[in-house]
Image 1 (tube, rainbow, N blue to C red):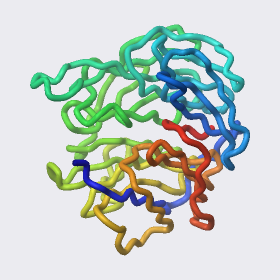
Image 2: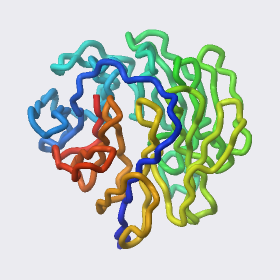
Image 3: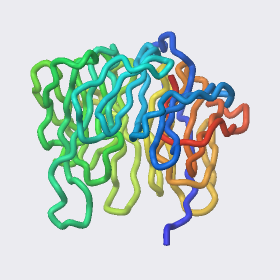
Image 4: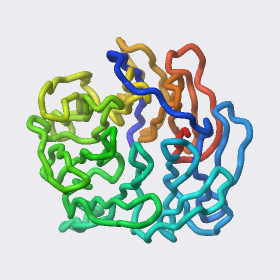
Length: 322
């Protein structure tokens, strides 16, 4: 029987030093089942203006807005598809087997994963992944990392782009964080990041936040480290499990989930919202004032300062705020 948990959502205030978000559409893209298939939808943050973008009768999932917010990438049974705001297909990129794609910060490249290394025990899914990059126009596809990403815990948040799009950081099969140079493919392991996962590169490029497992089934803490490996320090310690550290676009805050049994206890963070779920979806509004998350196939939005209660905006999954 699945254990009932409470996902505590927290916003941690950090020092200023981020970059402002560019002009964006302001809409939330997500997927919803229509019959046996997932289709793409968008909705305004207040829950109005619901639009269905696809009527494919094929799978569409994992939508991601481009940095300027005018293009929408998704994965499906036909591969990577890039659309405009109305859902019109702009291009189809080379077919790939799986999801977890992300635009580079300048919108010129797309990174994505491919399954590899089947679990030898046969009890789980793939044990590792390849990391590929391709130009957003569809050319120049190449494998950047071969069978080097640790996929034993799932494919979500295994890598993150650096500002400037010249590097990525990923969770390696060695159970540490590794930085790879996009142009040369050169790799460098970040010292002290053993058992690190879910990396998130800050918008100003100065820090990488990540989860660090304390022990098997012993929960995790959030650490930060500089890209050169210096300044490693714990940022948030917890006796439970933390999830999904996510920088605000202005780089001033870090949002994350805290999974605890029962009711949340004493918290010393700026904002706390509790929902019943083990969700992995967490995203910021482009202006860094709002956050969204999912719970039981429902998408919620709240102000990051806690001044308004959470609002249900749509039913669906895999939301991305453009």
